[in-house]
Image 1 (cartoon, rainbow, N blue to C red):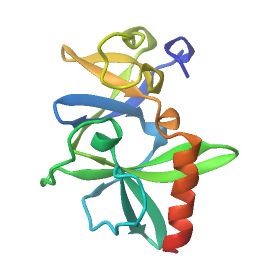
Image 2 (image 1 turned 90 degrees about the vertical axis):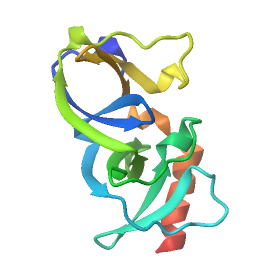
Image 3 (image 1 turned 120 degrees about the vertical axis):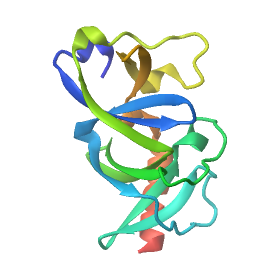
Length: 164
């Protein structure tokens, strides 16, 4: 979905990675968990921190800082796991996204969202739906379905099968 495709007011969950504020559509968020013990899975990329047990289901956890090329997360009282639904092929994959902290849920009108910048962005512009603005601060609205590629989602499914 590109900025032009956002034609209605939507709610977004904001979270922080270092000093940057990001947002995802609340429709993609299942729940927010306090940081918990993560079981490491061997031979996975560094940003794939491992898996957690979520009410009997195996959920892979990705460190969003490492995924975006930032330094590894420092665990604090605010560190949390945002459980999201990622559209993949004909279904949904559930992934835990490790974040420094969750901020708030807020609404944005389509006219409050600008196209992502193409210069100087630390993150690939094709995973950014747009740039929102709240209280004078820019917020990168992520396309959670494009953050992880097919190979990573296949590896995620293998992690779940191996851990089960």
